[in-house]
Length: 417
Image (tube, rainbow, N blue to C red):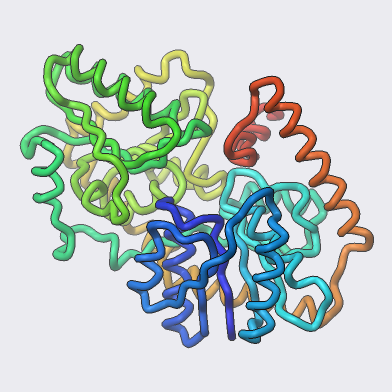
């Protein structure tokens, strides 16, 4: 099978890295896979896996007509069977490039916490949580697949010899003898910034009784907020106990250095692969430890949640961190449990095989002539309405960078329950 995969960008991020790792796994299964998109730091990872990278024209207003035209020519020239877009802009550009019939089938993966309603319902779609899959079936999509984010459990594992953890700690001044809490995250204002700032406050509170250090690895629009809070926390503690390392193309040293890890989504899963106890981060004060009892919740809603509110969030996180840092035997047991979950359910090869099945079903549905009558017009109307709402939001100063992470399905479900 010839597959062209189009991630939403190639900057450092969990979903992009997962998409690239899946490309490598599919290539090892004997399929021809190329990666398409705007150049970014992760092109290095694409090439390290022996994959070809094709650069798209510059993107402007999405979907970008020049990208659609270039992609259509590329698909024809290379006789591609499946073009796979990640998140709505590449999905729409891939779908438009396939219009006219006779060429490849366009499929979608959406790992945001909700799905853009203007993605046409005839596009086969994979989502990352059972809760979102159920919501999309209720919306009327007839081809919805649950493809949970993958983890390369061989590349992300305890005791790695190809990762210089000692050098990482030395270069960032991370003390070797102080318990360490680690976060690897985009410093995004939507979903993530609230929890990162809460973690800084929690570690500051913990230091009133015992030394604990927090390592934050990542970059993004919230950098100034994080750095300012880090500086203030260290000043109040009287020692450098909160450390921002910046972004790492290979963040494995940051995962490996933590005694307890905080995270959501793909970062939570990579934390688990390192056999570390995990506290899952969400919004509105959500923090929940991964245990055998909490696992069903995460398998339903994903590695994220919505809490009762930010009041008391610092105290809730302090309590969970203290219980793990003071009970090493329990922390080790939960770390072993976490890695076992990854191996049983989220391993890269397992997810790659399921993704190939997803492609085969999409090709079969195209041959069977599946379509939603009038869906192109309906999807277009939804897109126009979405753009109008964004324009109005910008005028009121309420726009968000990441629309469909700003309105998670889990949050909507929480409000309606």
